[in-house]
Image (cartoon, helix red, strand yellow):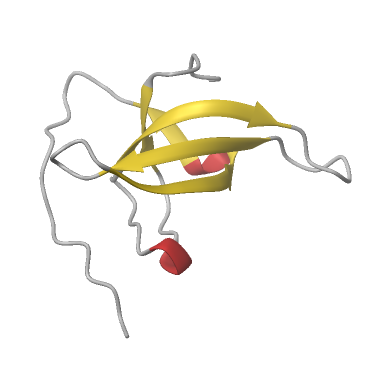
Amino acid sequence: MRPDLYTEVMLTQDIPVHHLRAGDIAVLVDYVPHPEGGEEGCILEVFNVLGDSIAVVAVPLSAIAPLRADQVRSARSLVRSS
């Protein structure tokens, strides 16, 4: 399923380089074609619980899923290694 732009989506896999984990929520900002004909990509903006933007990342379409009514939001610390 291809979620609508500017809706919240959930990551389905970890993105270690950005310290993001499967289950984190982001806003879908855009779709981008793969430069070599591979899987379509998504641009996501990630916010902390206070609403501050903390990351903009590109992930494959398979790395996101729409939110469902049977899910519950949670909070975790964004731990960055030095």
